Length: 168
Image (cartoon, rainbow, N blue to C red; front, side, top):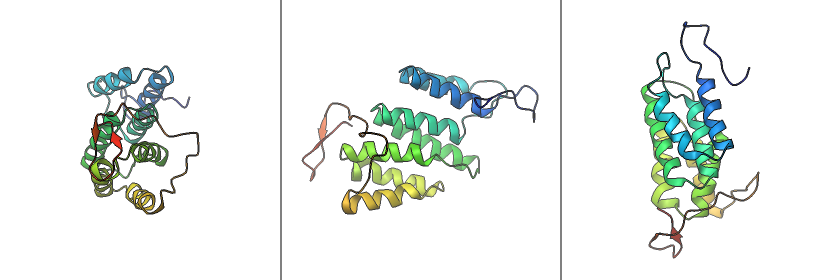
């Protein structure tokens, strides 16, 4: 099926699609903490080469939609480093990155968080986030295709020059 199987390439190896389906199941069941625990667990699975772009995409999308922006940014940074180290051409899905950008823009984390993150994504071979971010700075024309942006966490800090609190 679509959610994964034992790989035919190497007996005993785990197909990364299985891992991404498990991550999506956690978010479907409103268990983001369990999804993060699962990420840590899967890194120790025998016969598993570690998370791929699909696993990271499922995590970033679920965390961004659930308003867990700090965790989404941390996982995105980890994905950049991991995918670059693996010398892979796989990239995080546009859907996941767009959800993260929408969530960051909705809480005015543009310069403080989204800018540095855009550079890391660009260096890892994913320049579209930076292009979307620039477009969003110009005219805030980021349209939400599937409902409103993720809810920001309760305000803790106010960024200078914005006058709008941010949840980081």
